[in-house]
Image (cartoon, rainbow, N blue to C red; front, top):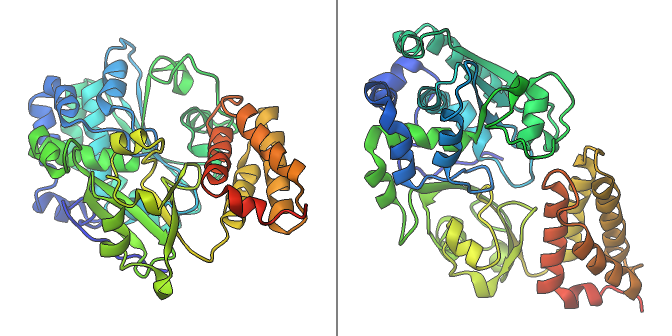
Length: 413
């Protein structure tokens, strides 16, 4: 299926030719960064830009932590692993708008005094890799690149690194392991990447959309970005809308747009006029929102107040008549298959969650299976080195909280 984006700020507009990008006011953010390098992190802080890969961590704090390190070697990693069901924003940006991503990563290199910029891309996204490879070749030959090296006072490495293609490969410490040539096993923190990342050097890891946004902030200013949002929210967000809607697609909308607007205005409403039932927010590793939550503002703070999360901005819509138990079982199967096996609690925990869900979904579940599910949702969170097991437990727990009667209705006793 082809998704046509709704464009708001040009975050998703310019194609693969660098000259075209520069002729249409690309490069201005980078030039502003070179004019006043010391102001970059302050601009990012004032913009209230947060990480667009899921966690929503303030971007400037990561950048400042790396900038404060005195090491000669530093790394910038642009995380484009994107492998979660319902999320398709990064692959679109990588394929269609490579230069704004690279420009944002180069601005980060100037801000942190980093001399290695790696574009970490899922190998299953062949079109994205082809587009980014051509863009990298163009940037390396451009005078702006030489100007950055002059500022850094040493050569700048810009290259593509293919991820393992596994879901777990997008976890930030697993990214580091892969870049170093190892298996994508997540690592314990601390130390954090800003202290000890690639080859033990300070490392900044941000999502594709985050770097794409940086480019426009440095071009237009923090105040401009603040004013794009609704209410107290800043900027825009790319929403991957899928599921039981008439117009699934990629929508760039003001941060703070309501769920109702996304589903019924931009998404065209529900398929076959079926009633809205629920939405998996931020992808399948998050909580479910129901009809009562349609007027929630989709920004980091508003969703956090609801006990949910914006995550990657993926919104998977479910209509009445669709089994929540079956959908949750499908997503937990994905997590079980994606576990790297390093943590016993994750490998066995996701397997047990999957097994219990399948028993209930197929009509062979007992009341004891439901109790076991509830117990696992209490025991498993924070038991692994990364958030995979937390995500699996969260979606099961949320579905039990919101649709307990649906589970009960499928038990045989």
